[in-house]
Structures are given as C-alpha cells and as structure tokens.
Image (cartoon, rainbow, N blue to C red; front, side, top):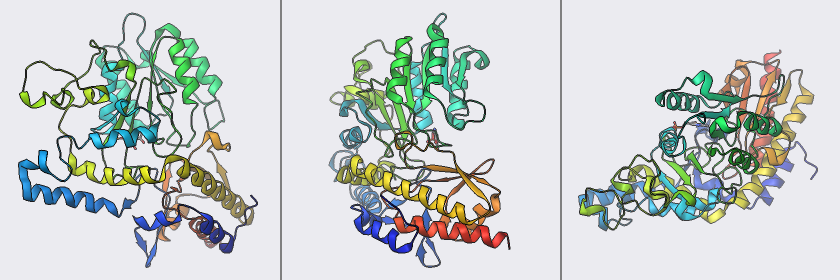
Length: 427
Ligand SMILES: Cc1ncc(COP(=O)(O)O)c(C=O)c1O
C-alpha cells in the first residue's frame, strides 16, 4: 500500500481499522484535554475501562463475604488463577495445562531455573544475550553464584557484531555449538527490550536441544505482541510479565509456560507450596506434597486475586480479539509509523536511524529510533507536548504503537510534533 503523510490519509486508515472501536475501551492520560499519543505500551499498557469493574467485584465480595469469598465469591478466589490458563495459552501458543499465572517475572524465572538450571559436571554454563535486560543479568549471575560458579566463566554472552544493532541468528547458532556439552541452559529474551528484535525462537530452541541443553525464554516483550507457538517450538519453559502489551496494570503478575513433557516428572526439582498441591486435597492439610496437574504444580502461594482481576479483564479482550487480528493491525500501524519517520527525516536536518530490524518477521510493535543530531531535549519536548515515549541511553527513543488502542492519526500527529520539536530547536 502506498502510504501518505497526511491527516486525511491517516484517518482513512483509521476508518478501515477493524480494531478502532477498542481504543475507546482504554483510559488515556490527558494532555490539554486530549488523549496523549501513547507509545509506551511496551513498558506499561493502558488501563482497560473494564479493569475497575473486575477489581470492584472482588472488593464487594470481600466486603460481603469475607473469608467465604474463597468459595462463594462471584468468581471464587481459591481457583481464580485457573481462569487464565486457556486464554493465556492462546496468546502464547500452548496447551492450557502448560500455562499458569503467578508471582512476577523475575521471581518466576528464578523459580523456573530451579527446575531447568541443573548444572552438573562439565555442563554448567548459561548462554544468554549481551546487554540482556538488567534484571535477567542479575538473576542469571546470582543463580550461577548460588550454584558455586564464577559468572565470568559460567555465563556466555551472544554478541552483536561490531557496528551492528541486532543479533545474527548464525552467530547465535555458532555460540551454542561452541559451548556445546558445557551448556546447561540457553535463556534469552525472545524480543529484545532495547531494539525490539524478534529472535528465531523455534530454531534457536532446537539448536539448544541439539547440544543437550534446556532452553527457556523471557517473553516480557513478546507476550501479547508477537505470534508465539511455545508448544510447537518445543520450548522447555518461558515466563512473561503482563503489564506491558497485556495491559494488566503496574507490577502485575507473570505468566509461565512449562512444557508438558515435564509435568509428570516426579523427580524434577521445584520449590513447592500449597497452591501447587493437588487442588482436591489442598485443604486436607496433608504433610506430603502431591503436585497439581500441569504447570499449576509450580504455583506456590494462594493467588493475589486483587492483582489478577485487572489482568483477567484485559485477557477477556485478548480472547475477544485474538492475536491474529492484533498482529494484522500491528503490522500496518508499525509500517505507517516507519513511513512517517522516513518522511519527517527528509524534512529536517537531523536523521533518524531505526535500529529495529526492517523485516516484519523480525520485529513486533516496537521501533527503536536512534536520534542522530538530537538529544534528550527532543524527548523532553515530545513528553511536554503529549507524546509519551521513553528514552534509553545513549540517544534512543522507543516507540511502540500498541494495536489495541493506538490510531493511525496518532502516528501522523506524532510526526508533526516531532518535526515541530526539531525545527523549533534549530531556530
Ligand atoms: C525483558 C525483561 N525482563 C525482565 C523484566 C523484569 O520484570 P519484573 O520486574 O516483573 O520482574 C522486565 C521488565 O520490564 C523486562 O522488560
């Protein structure tokens, strides 16, 4: 399609957008009486209007039923988390029994490493990507030290080539092959938080298995953003947070995937608690742990239902719309944003380098843009003028037009504000 950088054209795209009505189902912060242009759904998604109702329902049940709410609430609390599995399984391409929701992301990755990082003899190394999200770096390093190894030796980073922004799949394969029998675990971010690059998870998982390692994925930037087929790709485990593209609210719960081949492994190491105990027998308070079926066996504590409520509200919307429709709109709106950036680039002296891969299959919703000739003042200008984006050192803004609620007109208006910000500065 031949795009145009005009208000009229952007509005035509909005008129054709099958998801346009969903915009009204989210609450936007206001700037001078208008919705902001929100590009940080990759950090914290907007609040679905339905979220409050789900939270209120629990507050009301708590007020009226107190402890009885565990069994007699509108949505009983004792099995509240079970409402997530089937819906989340569709988002990540898994079987419902392979998916559960609990804790928060870094906590879950630690817990999953209890099961899947089992260094022994010469097989003790972890392969991850260089400059992984800091929490992952701290997590991996502390796990390695916990097992008595030196992070310098036990952590092997996949590097980008000199002068390149993105990882090359052949370099990932080469590193996996090179570490070979010494590798206990491959654990990488499926979508890079800084550049938005989507890795080839299926083939990388296979390459990890070929050397006898477990393969897990941090899907913080992938869940609700890109197509995932975790079961089919034979991934061992994965975890993701829900407050980014999944719009569940700040610091909210994490989803986990545990491949079904491990569900009945009696001797799998795991940190256990009563919510992972067989639900039929949970309240018999027996001394011996009997695991629940499936990924739920990894549950530890009773579910924080007040936190899960907005997540469930959001998930109902994912269920209604489905990932294919979100991805279809995502592809179009990201392509339009890219076009607008190129057009504005021609009209100003500074230049924008999109460091996210140009190929659709190698990126999701996020475009990371290196602002050559500009600095933090431009970012500040955008924020002051109702464009919510984020800044990453040294000079990168990340733009993620979440397909649920961003409009094509937003992309056009953003281009105009960006241009004005640059031109005003050079006056
Ligand atoms: C890629 C990635 N991993 C891990 C985390 C940490 O998440 P949490 O604070 O929920 O543990 C984040 C948070 O933004 C992230 O983006």
